[in-house]
Amino acid sequence: MFAIQRRPFFAVFRNFNKMSAPSKTKSYVKLLQKAEERENAECVVTGCIPEWLNGDVLRNGPAEFDIGPDTFKHWFDGHALLHKFSMFEGKVTYSSKFLRSGTYKTNHENSRIIIGEFGTASRPDPCKNMFSRFFTNFVEIAPRSDNANVSVAQLGEAYYAITDGPTAYGFDPETLETKNLITDCGPANMTVTAAHPHYDRNGDYLNLGTTFGRTPHYHVIKVPAAKMTSPDPMNELEVFMKFPSTTSNASYHHSFGLSENWIIFHEQPFSFSTPKLLIGLKLWNPILSSFYEDKTKQSLFHIINKTTGEKIATKYEARGMFCFHHINAYETKENDGKRFIVVDMCGSDRSLVWLL
Image 1: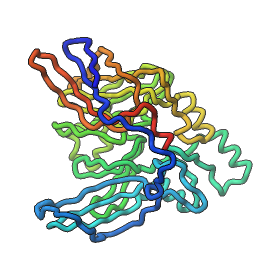
Image 2: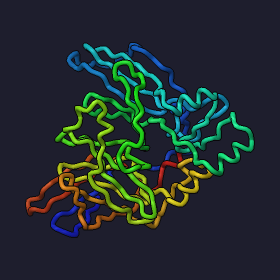
Image 3: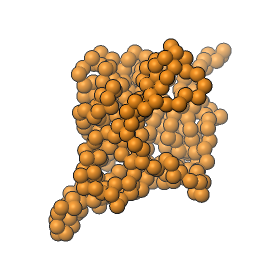
Image 4: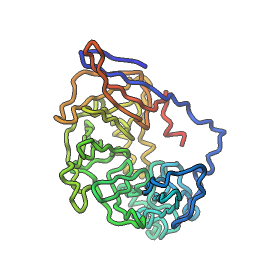
């Protein structure tokens, strides 16, 4: 545990679960096996599920890695599979269905990987001749995947499959059928969004996004509770506030913290290199090739008032670490009147992204 005190208000950040890199000899075969679609398959229950616990649990994740002769090169790349566990009177059934994204359809229509992903490069259209493909590589940028394969968001009565990019797919929570595509989730042309948004106690939907340029900017975006009755609430996203990156690169962020009064953003040493990203888009390199890890840099925590949008000017620094997931954030007040923000997060000394 460590604490940084610069004002009467200060923060405590705990590197609560210090992870080590996975062993290279350990097998993760099952993680990369293709899952099959299921419909109301009866599950074997170990133990007892209370009969009063009725409802559905919806999940999302990568589940198809081999397309014809091609294989995705990273665990984050697999085609999205929606999962539903339905509980009723102590029994559980399981259903699953692949998200029919544009990426999924294009790759299956060509029986190989055409639209790449986080760690897998895209390919030019195989129907073009050699000159056209060469021309495409050097003139056009690589197609952007809409494979929303990380998590599920509920906004009002609408359900969406979402990912770390600014696209989302609506889907039917009963049948898991894919519905409409929402592109550019947010009004600021963001390239990256967090895959794990938050819901405030007042009903607002909150997320973080990044725009690239000479100076990258981080945006807090939200759908106000009052707009949750819209037919498609994800189209109601608005920018709540924004602030510049402290470097010319943009920090990777898969999640963020939210306490009673504050939004907590971890600007970590693992970041997108803006030049590599722009060049990579032209050369059709995967996004993974644009990452940069600066082991000399500290972790920096930005604290934002979730009511006013004001960012505290105090710099809260800690030993540099990589973080995928924030676990919790809450506020405490000591007997002497000092206030704390306590942030629980999974951290490691090095990035785990390259190891997956």
